[in-house]
Image 1 (cartoon, rainbow, N blue to C red):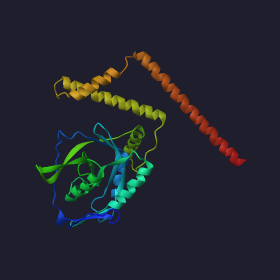
Image 2: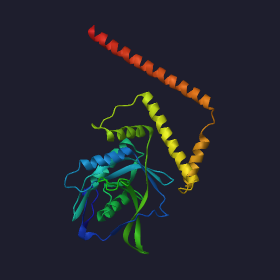
Image 3: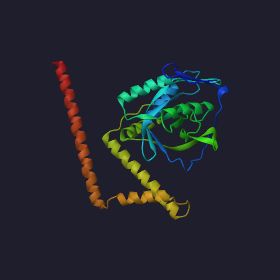
Image 4: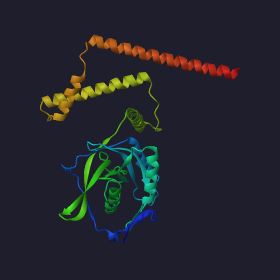
Length: 305
């Protein structure tokens, strides 16, 4: 049986497996007509993982609403989220739609620019109930995105995937829905990039903690990363010239644009500019440590007096 919620009266959508009349299908092919890119903030990924970690032990997966913006060029930026309570078994699924609408209204009061762009679910598979949940979000926003996050890390290189739904069937009669994948990317700003880099270092730490790097250590790390990147690019170009691997036109154009953007500076002049900047950094570091020492002495003298 299928019981649709009445606005303001029934807070959940109950569906039994016997009422399923729609078949779902998932494709691994990127269709030509689907030209969308989903960019997700790392905060959203961490929030979904936290939602999954705090779930009830009887729950197989968790779902929630994705908020963000839709660009005219087909780029969807997912910048926020909120969990949606639901209960899913082999026989039925219940989604708290009233909670979803209440939370969205609260989010609109904080940031009116964020709109509903889709929904997320833990796991890498699209189930029969995903079609029905996706149909609900299709009434909330046009062409919603379904984001799947593989919390079990069954495929380490493909832990995140996004899909859009398209009707499937003969003309004049729809017999199912086809979930076609769309491109996914991580929306990174400089603070997120620094934070993720610091978090990645905890993977090799015994106590899952790492100290913050000093300014000089940041400069040294940046130079080492630059040298590694240049070495990788030179090795790639040498192998393409030698005919060991086929060349990629996109990579070639990117390397050409990168080299063309580098200003032509004499080596001695570049060394002089670098040393001057390094001396300025050392001076700022020295003054900062001097001020910190003076403040500490002042606090101790004030406490003694």
